[in-house]
Amino acid sequence: MKFATKAVHAGLVTDKTTGAISTPIYQTTTFRHPELGRSTGYDYSRTQNPTRKAAEEAVAALEEGHAGFAFASGMAAISAILMLYQPGDHLIITEDCYGGTYRIMDKIFSQFGLTVTFVDTSSLEEVRQALQPATKAILLETPTNPLMKIADIRAITAIARQHTPQPVHVIVDNTFLSPYFQQPLTLGADIVFHSGTKYLSGHNDVVCGLVVAGDPALCEKIGFIQNATGAILGPQDSWLLLRGIKTLAIRSRQHEKNAQAVAEWLTTHPSVTKVYYPGLANHPGKEIQDAQASGYGGMLSFTVDHPRLPAQVLRKVKVLQFAESLGGVESLITFPAVQTHADIPADIRERLGISDCLLRLSVGIEDVEDIIADLAQALEQ
Ligand SMILES: *Cc1c(COP(=O)(O)O)cnc(C)c1O
Image 1 (cartoon, rainbow, N blue to C red):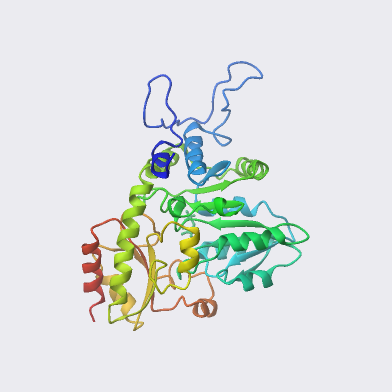
Image 2 (spheres, rainbow, N blue to C red):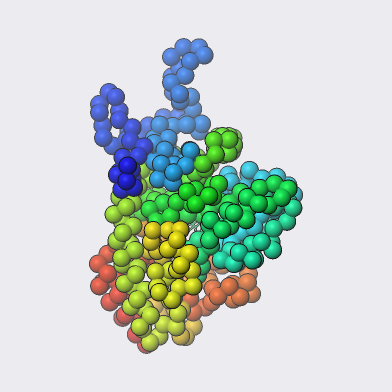
């Protein structure tokens, strides 16, 4: 089955009584047992709920994994993954990662004895050099947030497999591209996760997180952690996620078409000094991107020539909304240095290039002419 068909049909639970096409919202905490020692397959909704199961199966199918797990947020999903590891274990993480990923390692999991090295994962040499005997996982974001650097998932998987004394898990945060453009498990990664709040749901109306893995034993461990720690996605939100997924293919195509046009227009603007979008011919990661993904997505960043300009742009935009988050049908613009990446220390931010002149755009599915006209009036000095 092709991707768009899967997105519409995956996880469909045909209600045997009524034949309902839309998966019912099973707003129940518990399930009656037919008799002692028998179960319908559902016992208690933290452990499993039919609406959540439909959403989990849909995402697992789209990521070509063995099983999926839905959480209350992307951060809950990352937390569950990090609970696979033990005190003394070492992780390698993309240095310009989502600010919350940096924060949860720096402030929470460090307290439980996990150590981490943040590196530029677009450099295989930096990844190799960061490996230690205690390294258990490499956590990648590609493209990165907000600088759109590309990591070579196949090459990093090969490095991880060869590591001694034990192979290293490769974990990919696939939030930016969604499985429509990139399926990390098919490239060799062990675990893929999402802030489903973004493209998977797609309408800026639900916060959720997803984890998918390929190996049944690993899936069993993740399922155990999900049930034991309990940060599950509720039935209402699972239904919203399922509804969003149905249009993932058609939305993704429009997001990308608009982003490519906006990126190209920005490169011609006199006040714009740099545009970060992997679909631009001069993007340093374009070749790897073309080899591992089917497109470039809807996210881009750009720098302006004066630190006064971002505040003006954020004040003057009308079609674009000045708001955090991304991946929804509405175009959003953010200022990473003070919003999404505020938890990364200023000196590290500056070194990474997350400067006071950098703006990040989540290009929506509005008419692209309106998006460009809005940016044009907001950038006028
Ligand atoms: C938003 C986001 C997260 C965190 O997800 P929440 O749903 O907000 O908890 C993680 N990674 C990336 C790349 C994100 O954009």
